[in-house]
Image 1 (cartoon, protein in one colour):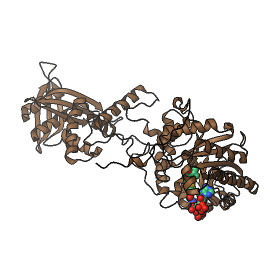
Image 2 (tube, rainbow, N blue to C red):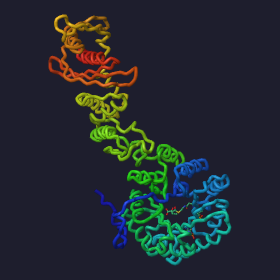
Image 3 (tube, rainbow, N blue to C red):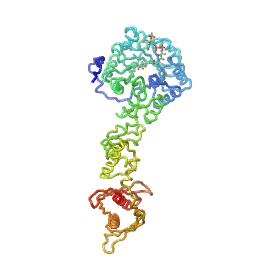
Length: 557
Ligand SMILES: CC(=O)SCCNC(=O)CCNC(=O)[C@H](O)C(C)(C)COP(=O)(O)OP(=O)(O)OC[C@H]1O[C@@H](n2cnc3c(N)ncnc32)[C@H](O)[C@@H]1OP(=O)(O)O
Ligand SMILES: CC(C)C(=O)C(=O)O
């Protein structure tokens, strides 16, 4: 085996943080959410959104309840600029919503940014420059002071330009881009230098956005960095600490949740995690995660399928079938023991009549976010009797007795193994009909009458009209009821000897056209078990049809 070149990489440096508090905390309220779909998400697309797509995304973000939306990098592209002008000129920004615009700390870009926001009511002007040791050395070739100078120059120009937009309330935001790759004391120093320019105060809070521009460490280190920063930045009550995690290591959600425990107030991210490389942190997952802990997420995710379809349209990228909370397969169990537990959990839930959700393998009620129960159980060769019984119950209202479940699931298992394919509810029903509902051929029941015996009141004589291999026939027998009388008639007239071992029935529908289903476990004279099932509006006839079905199985085998 080839050795992996691990020696080319260094472990990420830990943060010296005594008495960290985040491990013992829980998330108790939603953060301030800021969607960056139209900027960070958009800049990572194969084909950036056109105006139609941008508007569709923007409107959906509003519908979801976002109050802060980064609408673009207006100084970087004419499309972003024009889109912002459309939002402002066509009065498409609600009064309680702030639009956010990104700019590098470069004079011409900042000036153009201010031109783009003319006429808007609430704008977050988002200034950034990169601060990590690597970027300082390789990209900017500047020492720490040089990097602080870039940030301060941009901050000063922004302050200077505020009078040019008198109708606009400006909130300041600064990002030490690549924060997580920056020495913490330097990150603090550069942020404080910018805070000083903007005169941050409790009344004039500055947003300090601390990006994990590239996710490079385990989430606990991210949390330590955030807690360190919250503890060490001056005038904590004058700043809003914002997270901007990416997902390079696949732990963007964990890093964000731990970052919130560590003291952050705000989160920037995108729907389903679109964004550079492996994406920004996924705000939908974060919000639903919160809901699962009994916390109001303050975002409306009640129609997650629509959010997904819109995001897929706008981004022209699919959302994975296993994506948390939204993927096509995430509420579906294929494996037998999961299906059995889900089926029992759903029954228990109904019986408890409680509002609290509690079903094994289903961490939320799919209906709470607009998904259905339709696909929670699907059948393949990994499935067991519980799953098959669930489909019969859920899709066809047939509550199979346990021994029939065992008998039937073996047949389904056989089909699944032979075909190697998923077994749809329709195939399950067709197989059930073929196996147990064989009520028309070679024997078909037409009608029956019973009369009491003239000597023994408990004995009744039954006469039945049947079709037998296509020919009308009258058969008769006796017993203590119509079922016993019919099995006797079948034995005497057709030579098929059956004894009833077990009997279950329930109604299938309600109202005047109500039907009943009867499940009969019968034994042949050779001791073989045969299950027959009959459906009819008359419960006695349903049972007789079940005997007919068992008879037909024997006659045809
Ligand atoms: C982590 C993030 O996602 S940050 C956002 C990134 N998004 C984008 O880049 C999308 C939009 N960007 C663009 O369209 C372009 O990059 C523009 C219009 C902003 C700038 O274009 P250009 O000036 O032609 O080129 P380019 O981006 O290569 O400029 C790099 C220069 O800006 C400097 N620079 C980069 N970022 C910053 C910054 N935040 N503040 C100040 N200077 C910066 C670089 O050091 C470099 O300087 P140099 O030319 O002296 O070496
Ligand atoms: C501009 C900043 C916030 C950014 O997009 C990043 O660091 O990923």
